[in-house]
Amino acid sequence: MGYLFKSKASFEAETSRQAMEACEHIISEMGAELHDDLIQRLSVFRLYLDRLESSKNDQTETGSLILSMNADFQEVVQSVRRISRRLLPVKMEQDSFQKGIVMLCQNMERPGGGTIHFEPTGPEQKISSLAENYLFRIIQELIHNALKHSSAWHIWVRLTWVENELTVEVEDDGTGFSKIQEFITALNKKYNTLRMRSNVIGASIHYMQGKRGLLANVNYKFQRT
Ligand SMILES: Nc1ncnc2c1ncn2[C@@H]1O[C@H](COP(=O)(O)OP(=O)(O)OP(=O)(O)O)[C@@H](O)[C@H]1O
Ligand SMILES: [Mg+2]
Picture 1 (cartoon, rainbow, N blue to C red):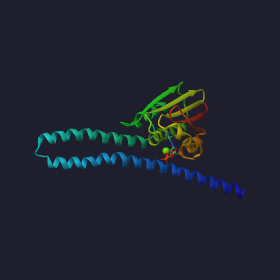
Picture 2: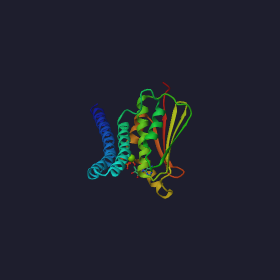
Picture 3: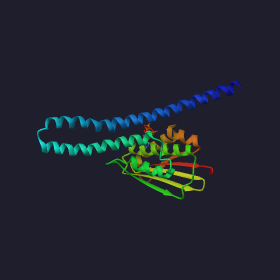
Picture 4: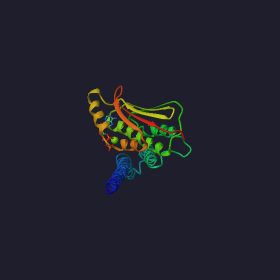
């Protein structure tokens, strides 16, 4: 009995530690987004103000500065929008899980970065909201990894629905054959947020060699609700 209690307590401690780690992970991603994107874009406005100040008697110069500021301000708004979309609950209430993934693919594309292709197969089925949230985060992290660790031109996000089963594939074309095997071995062993979330909803995650990069495969079997 004492032994059982002890293992339950340590199980809970481990679960809490992992939950905290997952939170930290998301917070640091937000921090990185603020740091790499938004702050850089905003700092430019400091320069604009200085230049406006020094060219206030030159109408042509002022006019062209305002044009540039307008364009850059649009970018700032886009950046804030991207960050708030990541913080907000996954999708609009009325949207389906799959619609949320379509939007995720659109939101994660960056000018000059890879193209994200969304490829659904089969009729979408209803899954639990926990599974929706976790699969959304898993797909988000897989896309993020492809953008961050490979120099992908293309990322394919495939959702394949067959009865009571959803298969998610995220494939990129960014890593050469010679390096891919070592990443696959490491990823198949690693207990990261991807595996943690998969375990919670009873899904399995495997990595393999794609056509020209990494292919992650998440298999989720569910009960019809
Ligand atoms: N799409 C990919 N192409 C090539 N290598 C990858 C890809 N995804 C992951 N990797 C490799 O697997 C490693 C582990 O990925 P994982 O997401 O667990 O951690 P990370 O991305 O390095 O860190 P974090 O996710 O905590 O920011 C990466 O460091 C990278 O070397
Ligand atoms: Mg990662």
